[in-house]
Image 1: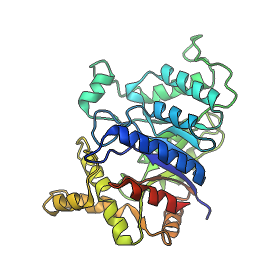
Image 2: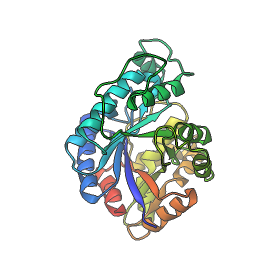
Image 3: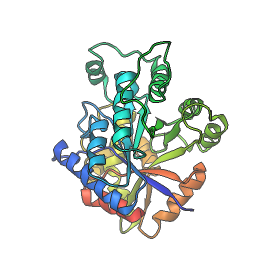
Image 4: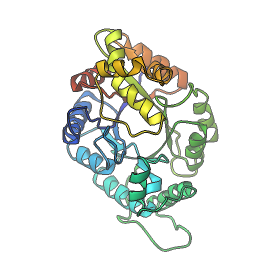
Amino acid sequence: MELKLSILDQTPVIKGDNAATALKNSLALAKMADALGYHSILYSEHHGVEAYGSSSPEILATTVLANTKNIKVGTGGIMLRNYSAFKIAEWAKMLATFYPDRFILGLGKAPGGLKDAILALNGHKLPILNNINEKLEEIISYLKEQNYKDTELFAQPMHVSVLPEITWLGSGESSAKEAAQYGIAYSMADFIADGSNSEIQKIYHKEFNHTRYSSQPSFQVAVSVSVAKNEEQARRNAFGMVYQFVESRKILAPGALKSSEEVEMLMDTHEDKELFSALLGKVVVGTPDTIHSKLEEKALQYGTNNLVILSNMFREEDRIFTYESLI
């Protein structure tokens, strides 16, 4: 099976370092991915947390688009509860104009941060959560230059020659159905989802509406991956990333990436040792000789060749080694 591989870059901050270094690492990784032939690279949104250095994926994506040649670049994603649908449509059309067929507009429903950060993003008021799908519908209308709610409002620039791809982010069946309803791509986060959810791809394809935004369905699976010269080292290299997954699942602000040694000491007496083991078990670990067959197994499990790879490592050279080993 020929895999279509992309990168999910969370711009990880290493304990003892800072966000400026993480952002420089993200740009260097994007240039490498462009040279290696990755399909796309996507940037996540996080606010007010130590773990991740990028709070504005649209700005990071713009910077990367300007510094690469072929790779598609996108947001992975913009959290709709925090922003105006009209403003998102405007800058998305700007990027689609400057970089036709290269910009991907990834959108999601998650908070993107803890309570104080979300309040600050929403004028210190609680966001309205029951209008997120309405915001998605509004964005699609502005991108396609359709009349929205009988207004004559339009999002500049008009007459964009190539509309941006839209990808809906989620981890379960309900989000897959929403993506299908609106005729947009779906990216499922296997690395944080409970169970395998292998039937979701079938549901998405069955319910895909070909008459809405895109005529063709696109189902992508985001997996966490660690590659090293031996599998035990690959497993240990993933400890810091998995510890952050545990913090997120417990609705805590993830800290900067810890070393495997520090995580090992923390988990020896940690009440969430079982959760840590379960999430570690979802990481695809391997060597340069074995990782391709393991990724193919994951692709077959979900019925798609479209995988996006997340690999946060305490040592940046280990993260680079992982991505270099996949292509």
